[in-house]
Length: 349
Ligand SMILES: [Fe+2]
Image 1 (spheres, rainbow, N blue to C red):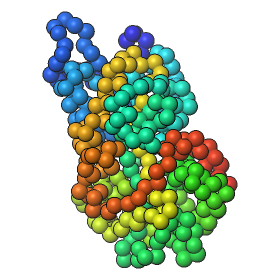
Image 2 (image 1 turned 90 degrees about the vertical axis):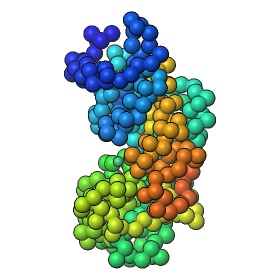
Image 3 (image 1 turned 45 degrees about the vertical axis):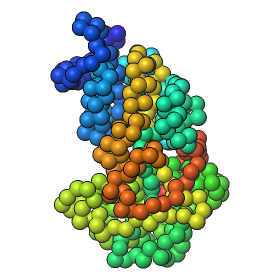
């Protein structure tokens, strides 16, 4: 099987095997073939590696980790097709998880553990992907220049009072595509178009950078309100130096609390279509949904646990409770193409 692997991957896996060789292997009799699982992850290695080591400790299954950008890994899965060594694909945003589903690189699995641990709205109805952590995308504002009483909904950001005062990243980013997709689901395509049409003239600058850059722009006085994912602010608050200084100037406002709730999304995982180690793949995803793993994973990433019975980090708890938009997240993927068309028509760069 290994001979079928593209060469750079063999090296990566061989390097990983070398670094994990010292991990204790339980449930593995001498001379027996080592149990393993190959993971393609769009998440940073340091945000998941300790959990994978714990999984190996508990199960004796070695994890070969390949990290990369979400788009590059999806592309790779497509190109490798049935020769892919990957068993599990981890990526962020239901929009992307749906893309992977639509591209045929995942397979449906059934697991009572996953159905028990993960609320229905955070997983694919066909069983091809499962949410593992949750993030919200609220409005953030500069505490000195905005009174939170002026804020109410995403829709109200189209009001004249916000002209030239809003920072948000570009429309080619899946986070904003999913936000628009959620609006299509709840309010309809015309309302989503009206929102984009009204938001674009209120932007302080041509969209640029990631969510952290929008938060920094608030502190730099470029804009007064922004829309960004909670974990960026959480990680900045947890850090030190300038990012922490910046983050301390920022308030979080939970929009749409009187109607559909604040937009939320997930990171998640699926078993790949041709997984050579399918059973181990399911065990790994089940492990990542366990209370113990959820607690560590959510804390390390400053994300909300996917399960109600696991506490959030202190930093996130300080941001306050909120009502989240509870639509089934696969709908974000279903509405993605329409969301992109709406954003293009509205001139959202
Ligand atoms: Fe992100």
